[in-house]
Each structure stands twice: as structure tokens, then as C-alpha cells.
Image (cartoon, rainbow, N blue to C red):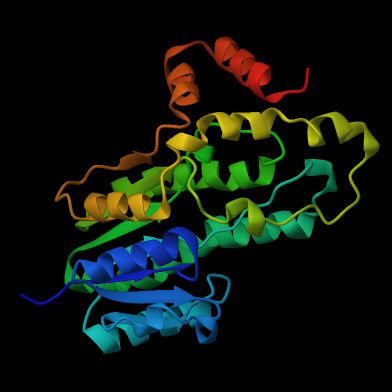
Amino acid sequence: MENKTVIITGTSSGYGKAIAKEFANRGWNVIATMRSPEKEKELTTIRNIFVTRLDVKDILSVNNAIREGINKFGRIDVLINNAAHGLVGVFEAISAEQIRDQFAVNVFGYMDVIREILPHFRANKKGIIVNIGSQGGIITFPLMSPYHATKFALEGFTESLSYELATINVIVKLIEPGGASTSFFKNSQAPSRPVPAEYSRIVNSTGMDALFEKYKDKLSTTEEAAAFIYNAVTDGTDRFRYLIGEEMRPFLNVKKQASDEEYVHLMRSQLLPV
């Protein structure tokens, strides 16, 4: 039987690299894309991985990567949209340009890659699209408002799209990780403007640090997350939503089961400075 092929965005590190290796280890052909493939030293050594350039903000590179992948392996069966980045800081100190860039990668980039691969899936009369979202598209934390805005947008877009594409036999799945041992915060952008002194209480609060310390033992590794995502892709169902990890479960449960007032009170008590 001919091996299936997956194209993955953002494979230079974190989830993306782990997903590429997981699928390759399972015998899939992998089109591993990233902005600077010339820097990649590991994935290029794996026989059934084809590394090529794709910058989700550069539509020409999106088209080229899809075309090259099809030329290399004959067809693409699955798209995994993973490329994203964070933006952490006080909203007032974050520039409009930074916010637009956050949406350009985390929302419009996903949309553009999907739009460009859909003609291929229509020609094949089937396909699977997986968007890697975040539980940050369900619940929020302070100092991450633009990031959460992109993840909430991705939630709505992906759910609506799933109904639409079901009519052409293309399955859409949304993966929502909680936290993982990735370099998310290390690689996140910081505000480009000075932070007003009035925000010092929230900026210097240890609430977020205490929260992540409390749940750090429940964090999934990138390898565990990659195996979970592989199973979601290959489970043979049209299931839409998959949550990875248990660390945010208490907050998710309260939001689902309690009143809005009770949920907000819990979040404030956990996250805001005393």
C-alpha cells in the first residue's frame, strides 16, 4: 500500500518537529516546512522527510511548498497547520504592528495554507486538515490578550470551516494543547513600547508563575503531544475537537459547569495580585 503524505507547517522546533518525527517513524511521507530550512540539521537526515521552505506570511512560499511536496510524493493526504508564535505583555505596550503580525501568523497564515491546498484535496475527493489551536482559545490569562484573540478567532474559523468542508469529504480537526515543554515563552515576542509603571503589580505578579509551577508535572511532552496528534489524524473518525493535557482541566471544568460569575471569580483569585 502506498504511504500516505502529511504536510506540516512550523517544524523547526516544538510541536512541529516532534509531529514530523512521529509521522515519519510511523512510515508516512512527511513534508516538513519552515521559514529557514537551510538551518535544519536533524529532519534533513530522515529518509522519508522532505524539508522545504514555507513562511505562512509569504503566499508564494506556501504555493511552492505544496507543489514541491506533491512533485516529491505524488499527493498530500493531510495538512497539519502548526506554525504560530506568542506575544506576551501588557496590551497598552504592544504596538498595532505586533498585533497585526500575530494575526498574520496565527490566523491568516492558517487560512492561506488551507485555501491553497483545498484544490488538491478537491481533486483527490478527500483530505484531512488539522489546525493546532490552544486551550488558550477557550480560557484566558493576563498579559496574553492578542495571543488569546488569535486562538479564539481560530476556534470560530475552524468550527465553521469543518461544516463547510464536510460537504466535499474533507475532514477538519482542531487540536487544543494546554501546556507543553516547548519554547513558547522563550520565543514569544515582548511589547515594543515602554510599559507604564501603573501596570507593575500585574507585570511583577507571581500568580502565573505559581500556576504553572503547580501544574508543571501534568504538562505533556512534545513527544506525547505528537503521538496524540498522530492518533487523532488516524482514528478514522470525523471527531472535531481534541484536548491535550490535564493541567488546565480545573479551569475548563469550571467554565463549562459553573456560572460565568463563578468562573471569572476563580480566574481572578488565581491570577491577579493580592
